[in-house]
Structures are given as structure tokens and as C-alpha cells.
Image (cartoon, rainbow, N blue to C red):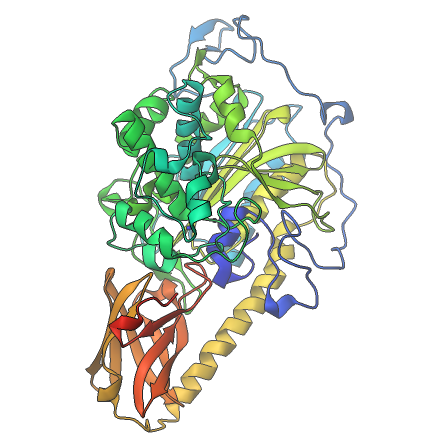
Length: 594
């Protein structure tokens, strides 16, 4: 899977959108969910009048590159040694020092370390890595905290994280390259390349083009189908096939809904046109030319690599190490792994019109295509953030922020949350990689840095968001505790537990199998062989469902009864995976259940 993550159960959308999403528990203080980069409380937070001392005339001035000048900002392959002589610079030998210059905001060189340390402690973030690039230089590139709790190894600039949906810009860039080379058109219909492709209705199927797949505009709900697809054993072709069963709640090309499976379609189109897999093409055409030597296309084998940040979650209990996601079947949407050293290069390339180390790595026209807005995601003014409009391009969000055009994406995998952000007119880039998916600090930090560079009045973004996180976590804890109390009453079921067992079916997902175990039941999932759901009876034919993977959560599971026998069950998982519950029925003839 993609709103600030102050509501943990909607974490992945929070991450992917980078917006500030209201929730039911905040209905009295927050407007509807399409309002902002952060939709906001109706009463804006009180701001302390602390202004960053950046020269006023620099705020809106775009620095120009001069690639023909050997010492100009467009030339990345020279640096000055201690004698003042120009020397050849290796591709990954960035000018990276934390020494301030006269353009670095005081917050960055005076307060950044302490701000990050406080925020990591407050939000329970075990490890974090950050890079800031400005005017062709790396201003900050370092790690904080530990790779794994209880072990001495620290996070550094080379530590690997799953960057999840930050993979999407690489996919969008790859398709934009093929469009620029006239090897395909972004407006080509998908069925031209995948004749068997189907959406829910025939009109959308006929009209759907490559641009639609890269822009979240087929009308489905955000994350629709992802309980079936995420961390599953389904091959990518099966994911695409199952898209025909996803009934849209919105209008085609009118309503935004974040769609991971659409990017799988785009990757398959790329494969059909080039004869290369998505992984091969992106590696050869983007990563290798950009010198991103420690960026990997897939999550497979990540646990065996060196210098990896371990994933953590604390949504339904204490901070716990959890398994790495395995989402390579959703590769073009979410499977890439990287570190801030490599992402510094990606930001440099984005901020210098496709140039890096004095070479044109990507045509400027290709980058422009990714930055063209294809669907609006919001048009309401925020009272908490200096923003008004938001849109989505090809794997990339865009918005105005304090009068600048900001591009960004966030990424959420279980245990890892990340962002990549750049502001071309300020030649400013930011990337933050972090562990514990149940936190918004990584996004609060990004906005804090933007505020500093844009001379925006100081507001502690971390504390502002943490208020909502505390309230929402309290609500989650209360809901779970209520389930525990119902189980502890030890109410005897009116129907034999054996009658609840058997196979249940859902059209999109497939089969779940429920069996007896001691005094309870267990559910096993056809497409998630390592996932178990433990079912403990509460009352009224309702069970507490506790997933073996802590990130999936703890929820009620309600069985339907017909003629005194269970014939269906409604189950759900953490909204980090998917918002909607799934109805499974015992009669396989009833499989057309959505």
C-alpha cells in the first residue's frame, strides 16, 4: 500500500498520501478527509513567534544551474581540496558536512539533532536515517538510534529500509521514459498490451490507459483489495486478474482512490513492451546510471543483507519486532529497498533537471511528465499548514506549501515508514527513513524542515501531531480492552464450536479455513500461509480475532446464522492494510461476495 499518520489504523494511507486525515474520533475537531497536506483542527494551533533568520530575498528565488561552468552548481564532478585546488570527485563522494553556512537555517545546524532525539523518544522510533540536500550539496546525511533494539549496531547513512510506495516514482519515471522515447504512449489503453485485463465495468476496461494506472483514478476506494494482495502468495498476474472483482465506489477518472494493484498493471505493460521485467528495466535504466549501488528492487532476502533496520510495531501492544514484508508481487507499487546515501543521489538528480555528476542521467522532459498533475486530491485551504491545492502525477504527489511547489511521496510497509520530498525552486530535497509504522514523526520532521527553510513561523509539528496520536491510541486500547472483557466473561456459545468450522469463500480473496483448536478456533488464509487468526468466543456469535502478525491487529469477527448453523463470517484487519471488512460465506456458490 500510501494524510499524517496520527491515526494508527490508517497508517499506510497516512504514509502514502502525506496528508492529515480526520477520523471518527476527531469528528468534532477535524473537517472531511480531503482537506489538506494535513487536514486540520478547526482551531489552528497557537504559533510561537520565532522566525528563522533566512534572508527574505532568498525565499522565492530559484537558483539557476550552469552546466557549462566547471565550478557552477550544475557541475557535480569537482570539489575543492584543502589547498583550494579543484579535484575529481567520485560519483558517491558528495560534499556532505554538517558545518552550517550562511544559507542553512539555524534550526538545521542548532536544533535538528535534539529535535530528532526528542521525537524518536516520544514516538518510540527505534531507528531513523535522514538526508537533506540543498543547492547541490548534502547538508545532512546521518542515522539515529539502533538497527535493532538490544543490539549495539547503530543506524547510519547506509542502513537499508523498505521504501515501499516511494518505489512508485521509479515506476512512473520508467513509463515516462518509454513515452518520451515513443516506444509507447501514456495514453495507450491497457488492453493494447494486456488483452485479458478487466476492471469491474466494461466502459472503464475499454478506456483505462497507462496514465490511469499511474495516477490512482480508476474510481476504487483507497487500498481496495490490499487485504488480498499485501504480503500474499498471489503472483502479479493473479492480482491483475482479481481487479475485475473490485467494485468501484467512485467515478472513473473523477474520484481519487489509492490503488497499488494499478501500478502492478503498469509494470506488466512495461514488461510486455520492453521484453524486460520491471526490476531489470529500472535497475539498468535508472539505478545503475544514477550510481544507486545499494538500492534493491525487491524485499526478498532483505533479512539476510548487511546493515538493515529491523521493523517494529506498537499499535496493539508494546513495541515489538515484526517480520519483514514480502511484497515483491506488488513490486512496481512498493517493493524497493534503499538508504539515505542512495536517495541523496535520487534527490540530486531530481533537483538538477535529471543531471548527476555532470551527466544527463534522465531527460528533463521525462521528469516533467512525472510532475504533471493527473488528478486533484484536494483543493481546500488548510488552517494548520500553508497549503491549498494537492494533486498526483506519475507516482508523485504535489502541493503548494508556503508559496512553493513541493513534490513528495511517503511509503509504508509493516515496521518501516519513509518519505522522499523535493522543492525544485529552492533546490531542496529531504528523505527520512524510519522504523515503527505506528508513528507520524517521520512526516512531522519533514514539515519541520520545510518550515525552517521557508522561514515559516515555528510550530512544533511533532507535538502538534502527537496530541492526536495519543487520543487515537487510547481509543484503540479501549476497543481492544472491551473485546478482552467480553472473552473473559466466558460466555458459552449457543452453537457448537464444531459448527463454526469449515471453508468460507470470498470472491476477491478466495478461501479461509476455520478449524477447532482447544477451546477456540483458528482461521487460516489461502493466500497468506504464514498468517493465523485466533478466534476466541465473546457472545452473540461473535469472536475476538487476534492475528498472529501483530500488525494485522485485534478485531471482532461476526458470524451469520441460517437455520441454526453458521453460514458466513465478517472479518477485517488493520486499516493499514485495507479499510473494508470482507464477507466470507460457506456456500462456494455464494463466492460472488465483495
